[in-house]
Image (cartoon, rainbow, N blue to C red; front, side, top):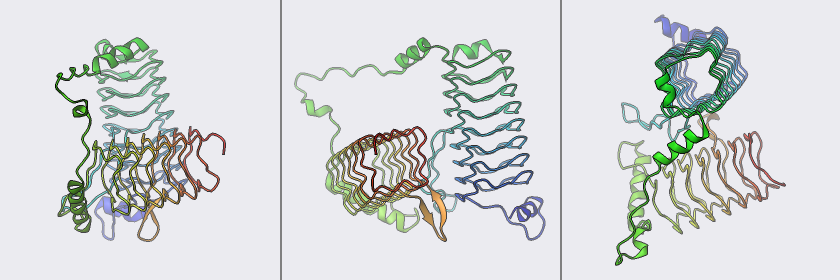
Length: 407
């Protein structure tokens, strides 16, 4: 594959672009290979040897690079949005204009076909990564997570570090001239010998007092009190009428059946569907960030690759629901029923991996997990206290910082 890719890059006969999205390449050695422009979005490259690998213009959107060794690698204008490089080594890497911003979903390509369906990995994670002596000039890290990362002697001139979590990071000897630090969190960061503009530092968060002041400045003013004649219920979020929801579901079925060319994708984001009956409904690839589904009936529903981050699913019935590849980051699933639900890895064609179910920071305290399939799911920092896990399947699940409580 690598040899054919080199032929493709050089324009020689019998070449073919390396096209390995979502493939599991954990532990493989691709050291010194030329993978310029390779398609590796969502690929699992944990602990891979990528020393000296050329990844210029490559698509590593949402890739898992935890523990990988990229020392001396070239990543010029590489797309690493939403990638996880936690604990990776990038000593001496060339990362000029690399893109490590928040990930964003792309649902269609120029021909109207679905691209990376339902894939939204969120902010790039560089926590504890070693990026010493690297060239990251004009790199884009806006909104990413780089707590305790080591940027010693790294060139970050003109880099976009706004809204980046850099608590405890080491910038000793780093070049931060012209970097955008607006809203970046530098509490506990080391800046000995760093070259940084005083004006930029003034826009960063350096102390707890700075954080409190910024939070206060960004907190919207309280709403004015209702007029005397206004009913209290008027300020409540109205429930979505059943006939309107049915129409949205029909349009979603058309959207799925035509690969997005007709109909419209179901978007329940921010809506109030408390107590709604969606049993057996097809919600594949639906959006529902922050949707309110308390006590909702979703028994046997199809929710593959749905985007329900931040959703309120307290006491919801999700028994036997298909939740493979679902995104439930920061969702509230307290006391919900997940008996027999499938939150395993979503697969396509000949067993190729597509994506894990993501429940990062999800709250599942007291949820029922009888015979629940959580194989390969990402439960980083999730709360599973009070759950009966005796019959749940947790093989290969990511449990970094997960609160499990007694079994």
